[in-house]
Amino acid sequence: MTRPRVVLDTNVILSAILCGGNPGEYFAMASAGVIELCTSPFILEELSRVLKRKFRWPPSEIEEMIKWFRSFSTMVQPKSSIKAIKRKDSDNRILECALEAKAHFLVTGDKRDLLPLKEFHDVRIISPIEGLAILSL
Figure 1: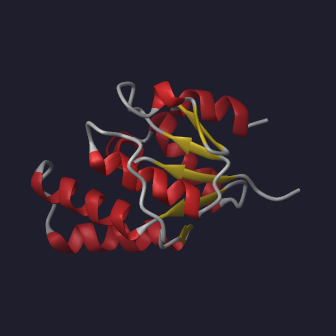
Figure 2: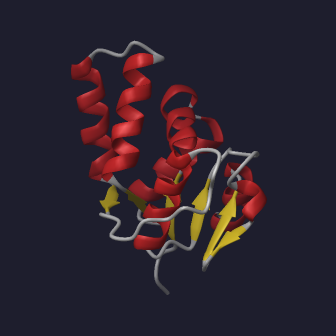
Figure 3: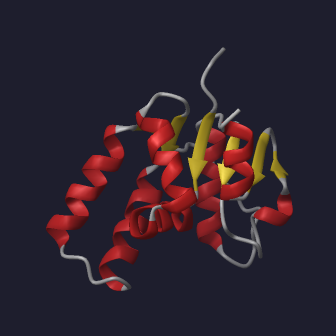
């Protein structure tokens, strides 16, 4: 059986980096080869921007963290443009990554725009806790 392909929304990656906990379990599963974690240049840029602006991380630490995250992630370059979310265009970039990666799951904490979709094309959109219940079987 192939490993489930998973895209983590930027908010989940940030939670994993800053707090560990349930979101951090995805890093452990990816490092152990249980799941294939997929990401995109946009997600890494957004992550870098937030760590710098909101959390005041120094550039060298951001660079190290991105390098570490990439070591257990598969990079995809979305080719199609999506306009499914009107309110927050950056959520469309997350959906583009999930589609390009042919992800089974998009894990997000976004209760306003992404989680209500439940599914987008063939990608299930789930919360971090829901994902752990499914993927830890």
